[in-house]
Length: 138
View 1: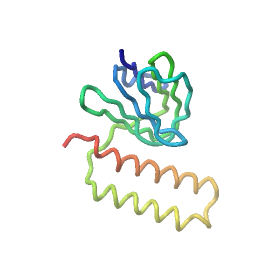
View 2: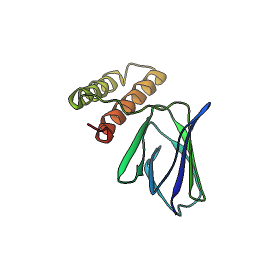
View 3: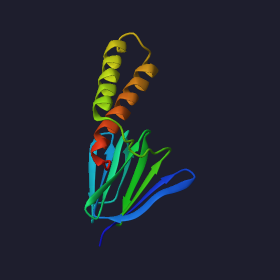
């Protein structure tokens, strides 16, 4: 037996498949889900959702927060938006993360709480894109 994974946006189902393992980004870190996982509802954070199909990992980026429901070997993932992982130069992606980090540090004391939150979310998204590059086929 395996897990059934379904990734849904408000108006469409993006992916529905069987897998042995799913890893989702939560507000407290990565959560690994395997067959027989306890029932739960979890908030999703900006990051990478990944699952194994055969011997290959399939990954998507969650640029917004969302929710996951785990019940009876079914994983339902609800998102407002999803991104495939862009093929890009690793060094450029690494530089983008460094620039965003510097921006967060420089603006930490002068910007409003809302702007700080936006800068932090942008940094998380850029980090997810950088980490996601290892899941992109060459």
